Image (cartoon, rainbow, N blue to C red):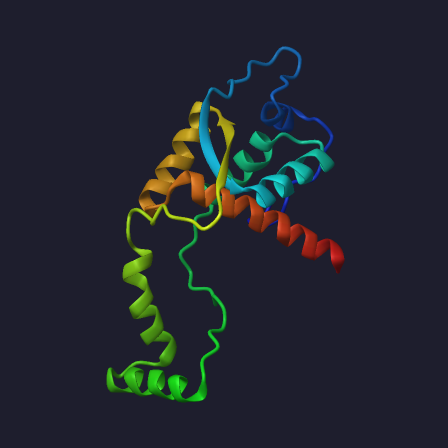
Length: 177
């Protein structure tokens, strides 16, 4: 499964049986005892629950698999983020600042933003009230995911929520095509 793609229902095989919590006959399966909280807005929570119900998978199975895949394939390649719309005069001013430092506008913006993005803890204030869900993982999955998140300075509750909602929206966009 590629990152950003959503899980779809599959025939239960030994590999998927473990992640769904059901063991194939004669096989021992590690139980999901470790949890990670996921903070979502009410709208995001509904979107996640609706998606998981429609695809007949648990929230833990869906988010756990996304988190595991993300931890295994953590990629630090540069990706375009978006376009900042500025009035012409401010855009020209930004270009001048960049040129004076011998950088492109992209490099200059990245240089300004990276110190904020490198912070170990993000601000906890939000405009919308957030609700928590729990994602249960096996000990191995939990260790893998937490090690990966700690290396990148990310909080599980925020990052996993963004990861899940991004995957759901990517799946919806792909289905519209």
